[in-house]
Image 1 (spheres, rainbow, N blue to C red):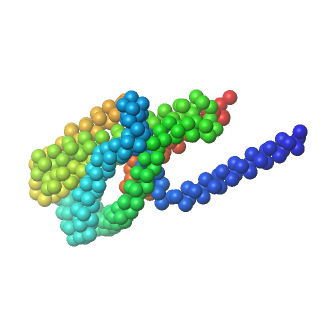
Image 2 (image 1 turned 90 degrees about the vertical axis):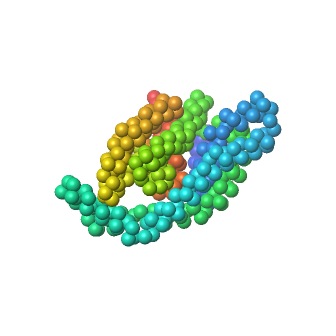
Image 3 (image 1 turned 45 degrees about the horizontal axis):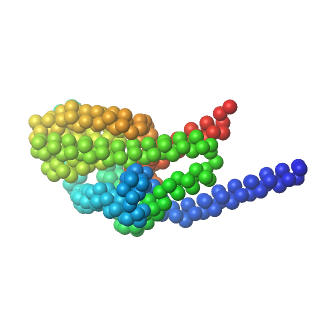
Length: 337
């Protein structure tokens, strides 16, 4: 009996080690497409209710319903993202490729602030560091944009498979996850809630802030208000000071170019309108979806940008949220007395 128990223990350890090693090799081999996999999972969670309604209520064939959802997701998600990317990238790339423009703007703004306050906020060394950091980010962004077609192809292949096998995917995880039925169900619900909060709430908040910001920039004479509205929406993914990283420099720029009342107006608009819109709608979305702590968002964005580039703005907070959920489930499943 003791020998059987020992043999069973070693067999269990061997199988577990083999699973970990083989799983690690698969993940390492597919690391290039991990963002496509996360994108497919995210879109699957978002469109799964529609898929079930089409199949179970409308009695659509699974293949036809999946193709319709792929088409809708392309129209609603990918086309706007591609359009925004091609609108932003050339302008930002052109701006940062001309060092004289950057130095002129920053020097002018710094001189104006120093004349008004008596403090030198930026010296030449700091200005060069800002330029170099921004240039590195843009170079990386452009490089990642070139491989986007391959990621999209893999994403839609996986998404089609997930949609056609709706129900089977959930059953697979319920069968093989080493968790109780209650915790498996809870894990599924929390992952779905966090996915909706990060992948739907964040972009909606960015869209709303971008619209309000573009309107204010247009009213107060900032050149290319739509572009800067998009940038404001982009930075709104960072909580607390995100959008301020755009509207505050915009106000300083207007002041530095002699447009005094326009600069003051943009500053006031940023404080009284853009920031209030951010706080109000962030609160509404937290109540509607999940209450994601700002620290999770900040750390998630930093980690996501390092791992996945620009898509990491969405995937980073998702990964942090998933990690914390798994820790909580593990504690309750295996460590609670």
